[in-house]
Image 1: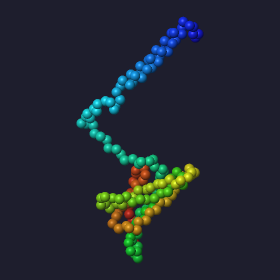
Image 2 (image 1 turned 90 degrees about the vertical axis):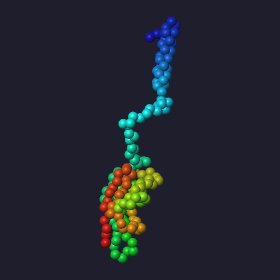
Image 3 (image 1 turned 180 degrees about the vertical axis):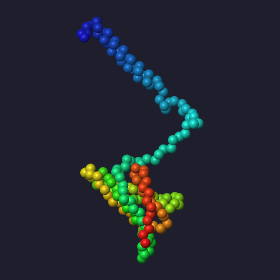
Image 4 (image 1 turned 60 degrees about the vertical axis):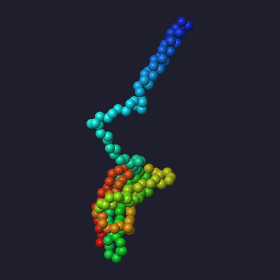
Length: 166
C-alpha cells in the first residue's frame, strides 16, 4: 500500500485510535479493584480454613533410604546401655554428609524421634547416584523405649522397632 499525502492523516488517525484503544483496555483492567482495595468479605459459616500440611523448607535431595536398624546394647559388662541406629541413604552425588539428630520431645512416649540431616559439602561433584551409610550411637540411652522414628527431609517418617541385644 502506497501512502499518499492525503492518506497519511488517515493512517496517523488509525494508529492513534489503535493506541487509544490499547490504553482504554489497560485502564479497563485497572478499573477492577485489586483485592487489597476490596472490602473484606465476611466468610460464610460453611467455609472452614484449611490446615496447612507441613512441608520441608527445602526440596529433599534424598532419593531413597533403606536397611534401617535400631538396637539397644544391653550386653553384660557395660555400665549403661547404648542406642545404635543405622541405615542407607541414596543421594544424587557424593557431595553430601548425612547424620541423625535427636529431636527433643515434650511428651512422654515409648518412641524416640530423630531427624535425618543432609548437608552439602563445598565443591563441585559429579552427578553420580551414591549410597551412604548413616550411623548414630547414643551412650546416654536410658533403656525405656520400644520404637524409633526417623523423620526424612521430605516429611515422611521411617518407623523402626527398637531391638534389644543382651
